[in-house]
Length: 470
Image (cartoon, rainbow, N blue to C red; front, top):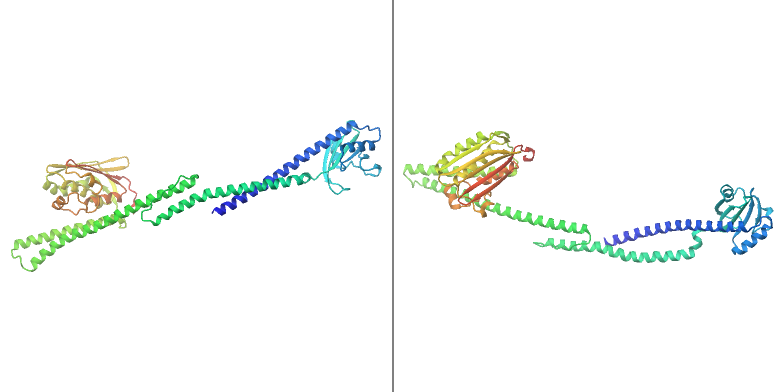
C-alpha cells in the first residue's frame, strides 16, 4: 500500500509539474511576444521622428541600424501603395515586390500598426514583423527581427526549469514517503491490534491518530469488540440457562416418576392390602401424572412461543370476559389461600390467540395468589393508553428480593425453593408470561418490595403486527 501511495503521489506531482511547465511556457511566450512587439514598435516610432523623408532614406536606415546594433534586424519603408522605398538589407529596392498584401502592412494601413510572425522567405527562419504608419500618414515603416519565442531563452530557462523540477521532485519524494508512512503506520498498528483476536479475551488499545478515518476504524473495532464480548456473555448466560433448564426439567420429571414407580411397585407386590390405601396411592399416581402433564405442556408452550413456528389461530379476544373466566377458575385456590381477587377491567379487545392470553392472566394471577399472605389481595387492572393495552396484576404478598428480580422470568427459577415446594407448580409460570409478552412484541415491568408485595405491568400493542409474529 505504501508503494502504491508513493507511486500515485509521484505520478500526480509529475503531471502537475508538466501542466505548470506548459502553462508557464505559454504565458511566458505570450508575455515575451507582447514585450518584443512593443519594443520594436517603440523603435519604429523613434525612427519615424528622426527620418527626413525628403532625403536619402537608405542612408538614414543604415544609420538607424548601426545605432540599433543588431545585424539580424531589418528595417523597411513603404509608400501607402506598398511599394518599397528603402530597405536596410537591399541596396536596389526597385527590384523588390510590393508589400501591400502583407498582414502587418495591411494592419498598419487600417489601424496605425500591425504585427505578424512567419518564416522569412529569404532567411528561412521565424521572423517577427512589426509595422506602423508614419506620423504624416504617407509612409509605412516596418522592422523585422528573428523571433523563436521562448526557445530564444532555452539555454537559460531549460537548465533552471530542470533544476527546479529536480529539486521539487526530491522534496516531493521525501514528502510522499512521509505521507505514505503517516497512512500505513496507523494501519499496521491497527493490524497488530487485530492479531489479538487469536487471544481468548483480547483487549484492544488504539492511539489517537492524525486522520479521522483511522480513528473511525479504531472506534468501529472497539465497538465490534464490545459487541462480541456482550454476545459471548449472552451465549454463556444462555448456555447456563439451558444447562439449568435441562437439570431442572429432568429433576422435575424424575421426582414424580420416582414416586409413581414406588406406588406401582407397592401395588404390584401386594404389600398394601387396605383398599382405602390403594385408592390413596392411585389418587397420588393420578396427581403426579397430572403434574407431569402440566409440566410437559408448559415446556411445549414455551418452545412454541420461542420458535414461533407453530400455526397459531388468531381471533378477536374480548379481554374482560376472559379475565372473569380465569378469576372464576382460580377462585377455589384463592379461598384456600385466604386471598381476595379484585378486578377493574376496561372493555377492550385484541387480535390474539385466546389460549395464550388466558395463560398470561392465569399464570400472573396464580403466582400472585400463591405468593400472597393470608387475608391478602390480588388486584387486576386492565386499561389502555395511546396504542397500548396495559395489564396490571398487583398483590400484597411476600415480595421478591432485588437480587432475584431479574431472574424470576427464567424457567424453573424459584425465589424460595422451600415455599415453592409447598405450594406446588411447575416453576414455568412467569417464564410463560414473559414468552407470551415477547411473542406479541410487548414489554413487562416488575415493581416489588419484600413483605409488601409485587406489581407486574404488561404492555401489549393494540394493533399487533402479525407478519412479525409469524
